[in-house]
Image (tube, rainbow over all chains, first blue to last red):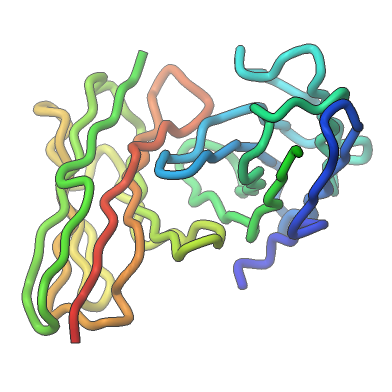
Length: 114
Length: 112
């Protein structure tokens, strides 16, 4: 257990539905990252926050995706109008600062879109 | 754009062997590099972080080296055990970026 928690651990939804995932980072960590991982691949960066500010978003993050970190603590990732191609593991990580610091990952949320 | 390659993609060895996992990256302007372990269906566990000014880092039976100028890192596992079976991921953190880029990993299986 790294201290980063994610909920739910698994989500099965029908195409077209909206889903929301939550990430609770290690409490003193000011950086929070979201990644997406498909089978057999390494995680791909989606977005990151410095405290409550969203500083970068990947081109992978289409308009259907939105992430928030309202009080600089937990974060949510919402996917609207889900598509089968959204099926993946969504991983959250946090770190104390940026470049020089280890990123600690949560267990992930596995999304299956039927 | 940083690209990370890990070779081999999969490796199966008998218990007790020493082994080396390789990682190469195209942009040598990195700030640090992390090695992670991932068990099936689980999140990632950080094993080692090497700063760009370092040549190697050790933790128990693991030793990671970094040759920034040639864009290569290796993870050495001594006296492998069945519990070492997992996917190992290499992830450099670029100097001009704010995120780490992952390779596809090496899937390691240690046979008892």
